[in-house]
Amino acid sequence: MSLYHLSHYEIKRGKNKVIIPLGSTEQHGPHLPVSTDTIIAEYFANQLTKKIPSYSLSGIPSGVSFEHRPFFNISITNDLLSELLTQICVSLGENGFNQIIILNGHRGNMGVVQYVPQKVEKINPKVKVYGINYWQLIERDFDHGGIVETSLMLAISPKLVQMSKAKSGYLNRKMLHATYSSFLSNSSSFKITKNGVLGDPRNATKEEGKKIISTTLKNLLRTIKELDRLLAT
Image 1: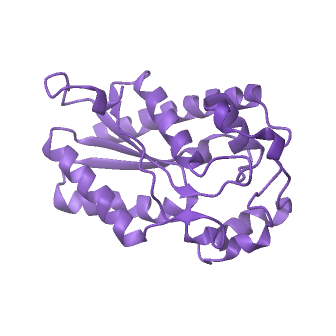
Image 2: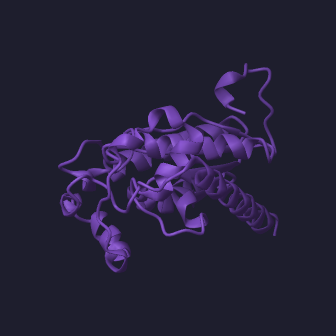
Image 3: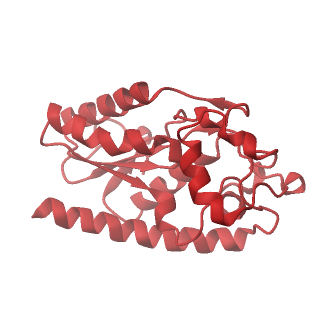
């Protein structure tokens, strides 16, 4: 359930977790919207609130996406994103929420998500923050605007997908992981793909998206339970 849909008197503090979906605004090829990462992260956050005692916030649409130059991106610096997330978590702690999950939907945000829990703990040791990168739990080779993200979007928000414009992009699988690592440190790395796509979205389907969602939700729930167990020890 979204926290924003409730009144002050309806919000139950205490054991309920708060999930912060973190996305980006960046190109995802000619067939997907620039909000893809945010939409997917927000969807998983909302689904999790149906499975565990928790609330979700609206997705944060701004991330660290400078690596997408010269393609379209609206980016903020690591420092600014770190401060934003830290202040949100601290404020949630002041309002009675001591368990916060940052559900990250964009690789460029990984460095920030890794260190925010430490920053928050220094300010308020009672507030426990965990960062989860959803794509690490999908049990598939990930891509950018390829079959995985396109299938997810077909299952989540099909009206925003323009399959008639879907085209293959950079396909060197052996180099994909290394290339992604390079993307995060090179502000113009996406010049390697002419259309901004890593992978091939043309065989993406809604059914495949549903399978990925099912697997990912299962693994997300397992991960959160493991975190709860660690918190209890």
